[in-house]
Image (cartoon, rainbow, N blue to C red; front, side):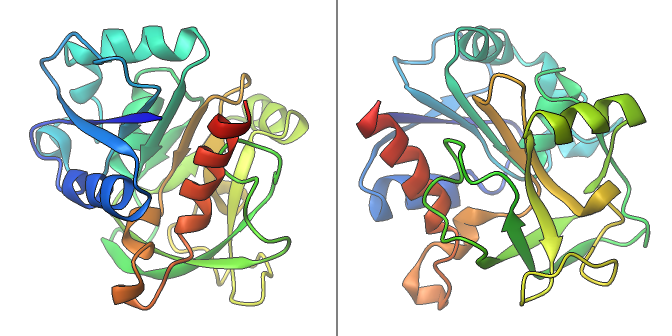
Length: 231
């Protein structure tokens, strides 16, 4: 399996993602520069976190026009696996590859801390290896992580099993107190209707190394690899 990690000007989690995929998960991994127009035969494309183009105008709003995004969209349209983390999630929403938008945190402050999330739909490429009812401890680092969608979109997300994760407490209880940014229905991650495009605000790549005393994020990467191997 071959992963491609797209790098935009301002990306700052690309090295973290490459390290986890290549050195911890032992997968062939390459970097894809934002001006590239070739996905180099990658099976899976990842848009990492950071501050693409300095988050000028709006988070992800400029990166969506990068030349490589045309090929990324084609990859997704053909059913290819596409995963955006934090700023990558914002880019996917701005590009119309995922529904909804990420607004400023209701606190109006940048949030950087460990949070807990629980998988809502355990039967996706990204969630199939997560232990049932386990609250995953995953770090966040964002100023615009407040997920928003209109009522019709929100209903469709819930009806179609497109809500991937909700913020919760360490015991798995979804509460207002566990919501770090004001996201609607505590939504921390979603996928598209075809269940091949995924986005989430927490950073699983920052919780996948035993040196950090937290490997909860590895469940997500193990899920993806397992899905491709068994396909």
